[in-house]
Image (cartoon, rainbow, N blue to C red; front, side, top):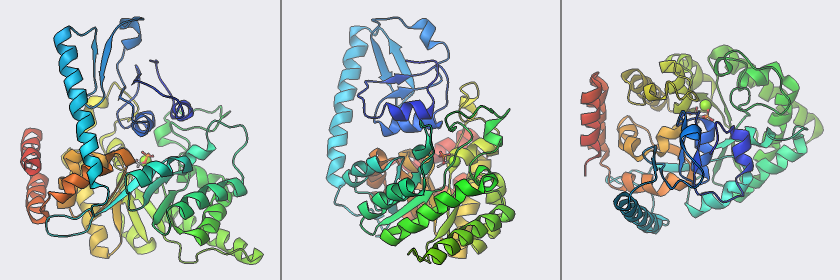
Length: 412
Ligand code: PEP
Ligand code: MG
């Protein structure tokens, strides 16, 4: 239990066993919460004054699914939760039976279900849950909790390990997204508004040597597997051009040294700023694929800091503005013939699987632990029905109506 835990601190606790994690601060799509999901540990963030209210030796029920903590429950509540826990474990066991099943809809359309990872050490989880690829490797975690930055060799080894470990399946590695809630050790300057500051590709373009080192390592790893490079936080054509120039320069330097790499390595962009969604044409014309980061896209569209518990209740994936941007990007990319995926937390939430399928999405990337639940939902989905209801949802603007239609979409 803590006032706050940074993503960098939490990742260090990965090898340890926890019963649950509680924090006063934070939002459900903050990187701290995302990592907790990766630990398969119940976690409730944004509890405000929990540390003052709770005492040593209190008995707690931590319901991470609903974001609820029950303090000193009576026997009846405890018994009910024990039952729920047993049912949950039984359900997880049953879902494991889907391991060898292909993810296809009722019509037989193949859906790609990929995994999000933070470290090469997450690969066993990816395999255990039969992901069809790594859809998002958040490479910045290699840079945290250390005094010296990883050099080209160390990065190359990490990327190659994942590329080889996936045996030809796609591995999408994101260039580092540092600068907001994930800072390099020793960085003193804290931007007045880090989420809007020198983050991700902005930081990369302002630190060309750091970027070049990573691009060279990524390109070198492309020789050993099916590597794709994904660039976070692009806002439009100018940054795309600068990024592609940086890639070309890294390729040239490898050519000069005779180092092999895949010349066709696909370069993709994350759609996570509203400007990117609205100016999608620049992305589909210049890049090989796009991946929608709903965590940030929602944050920036609704002007809600995803790490701030004070406004967490306003964070709404079903806001009509968000849904229209999603529909526009998925539809636009499909029309342009460019692969599109969703790799934000929405992709791993079963409640949104059919909605996204109905909007035309065919590729999802999520935490490995969520893959079987989403696969189960895919297996029982009719794309035709999902499309009809998803488009009805798009035409609705009343939140109650949207939820009612979503329930209908998810029924059965
Ligand atoms: C996102 O923004 O949805 C995303 C996948 O990236 P991150 O959560 O690392 O910001
Ligand atoms: Mg993001």
